[in-house]
Length: 377
Image (cartoon, rainbow, N blue to C red; front, side, top):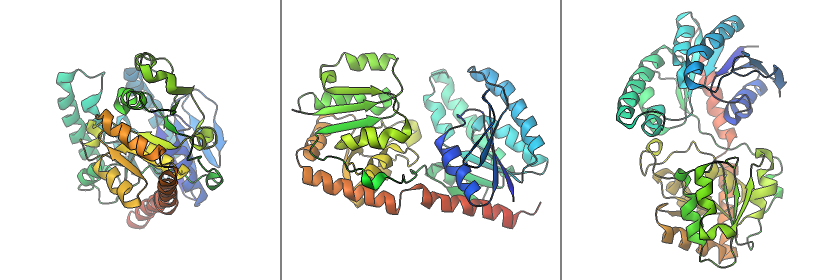
């Protein structure tokens, strides 16, 4: 049984992509999987995956970058795994060190990190382009040492496959729950829903302003962000009286407690740098979770999203900055329950057939197989 070591210092040990998708999938296909994390929780076994803590944790970003890596490298080296698979850009130096001592290493880029640097509030604006440029250059040089790349963004793939040919676009599509098909939305509910982090980039303000003059409509808002300035801004809006704010809801309960009560899923992501303006990306699960639940979507008119939504006829794409477009799209769907049902069923069928973790699992296993076939040392 081949030994695989997943590594993260940034993400929680229960990160869905790292644990439930990648680690569990590998374990189920015959690999012995260990997950190294930087926290102070006890070691545990989760669905056959051995979670090992460094017993080092700090919320201070600088301390984490300077000191957590030392503990991670020590533990990783002791583990003597056949393949190391790491998930944070700050671990690029550790990946290179492992590769230089003869280890097979996979870099998993959850986002296009040079792009994200352009929007990081903790980096002074005048430095962001410089930081982005240097990270892109370092990332590319580091990837020359690795045996495989697992990537979420098309342009990250285009850039990094030039230095590591064993690269796969592995999207963050949802795992198919066993009971999804038994949960059917009530398309006469006149209820829209948004789940996830509450921030300006998801245009919650514009959504609330859009429904302000729509009669008999409610807006379910489920998020673990309960104490921030943006939430206070939402409370001050005239349309807040139509909002049913649930706070944090466990992921496993979203389908039963939230999505099944709604009619339309809202995903109005801004034209942020990591979406390359109007191009968009397929790494965000929100759109596909709505579709899987059978909810028609009102979403941003990104090129990548629009191609799917229009092809599958599962919703309406709009300019997220245009309140009137948002209002018209929501109204068109909630005023026509039959249209909502058709769009919802189309989207659910598309996720079950194409846009789910099983399709991505195949690419993950191919990535690992290529390493074992092509690299003996």
